Image (cartoon, rainbow, N blue to C red):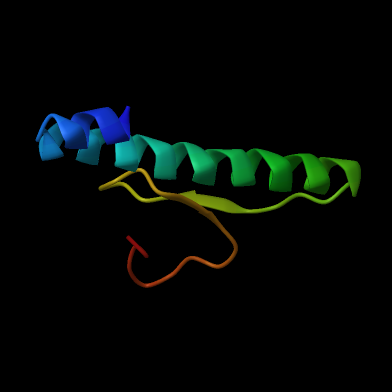
Length: 66
């Protein structure tokens, strides 16, 4: 879909697909990490950016990594 959007000179559409791909890749990693934590009987700490919704694990940073 990204290639087709670029072929049609629709960079705006391609950008949306690229961002969706990247975000879903991050979600997949978070699910795998959460499953690993559950199997290890460990309770991870997650934080969600109130501006963009970015989810990350560990200590609360001073600013969003995005």
